[in-house]
Image 1 (tube, rainbow, N blue to C red):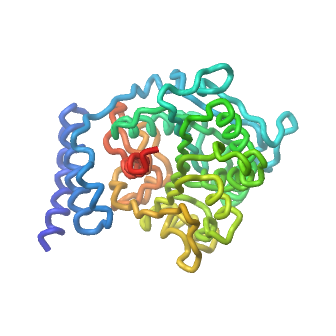
Image 2: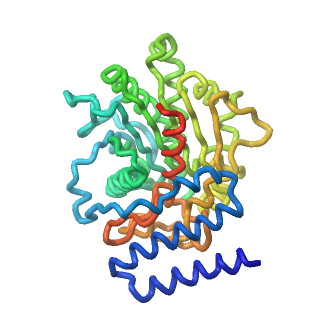
Image 3: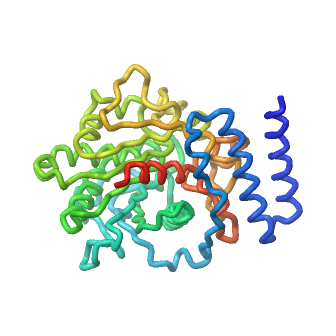
Length: 368
């Protein structure tokens, strides 16, 4: 009973502070430490990942990104935007199944490989506009920096902004699948140019379908089959909007995971508001990101799952700029489908790092 009273008090204090000093610098610090304390209390009682608590975030000050300048930033982007017809899902005649555009990417177009031999690739989910891709890529980097992991982050931007309805969803799934060979080509090009660089992928929501398609493509490549240097250091799926049987060892995807990735992680969340409502209603099955791999299916050898529900606080407007439709049903921990890569306020300061601390802990624990 004491635990529940403390937890309730945490939420009341959050609301009280927010109403009185919402625009002050003090709120940023108070809300950050209060949120960490509330999260700590919940983790102590409910989470099996207690080992992460000792290394949590309280020692980090907020990191600032000027939201007004995000669009003008020279962010690192690989783009396949406008390669597909958003109304039909068909590939436009001016493009082929493997081409992509790149901007400021280490190792490509004469750019040197990263100084620290690390590269993270963030792949966004469904119904994400180009502006939102820049914001999400930037927010991912802020959350990584807040966990003492400052490496280049590439945003993989694809035509996901179809109509927000069942037809648009089906078209987005098709486009995501067709982006697999394009992502595979980029990964191959980068690996050829930067053979000693760790490749780390973070894929959100329907971005998991892009990863699935890409790995199957790579697993059929003679180069990736015959050269052990051609591999992906780690992949983390967050809020994966694909079938809960997709990563089974008995599928093409599962085989590709074993053959092309050193360490593969699925971070699931039983209270994800989009996955447990719209996805199930449309697909008539559980998504991988809700409860993890179907319990009847075998894991690939290098496959790990973690429940990150208690890493997603009950905050809205994760970007600090726009309010996505998923905000309408955010009321408890784990709800916000947009919060896996962190939350920031309207002033650009990072309020919470979402599940990125779990990802960085995995990276550091493998020491590669």
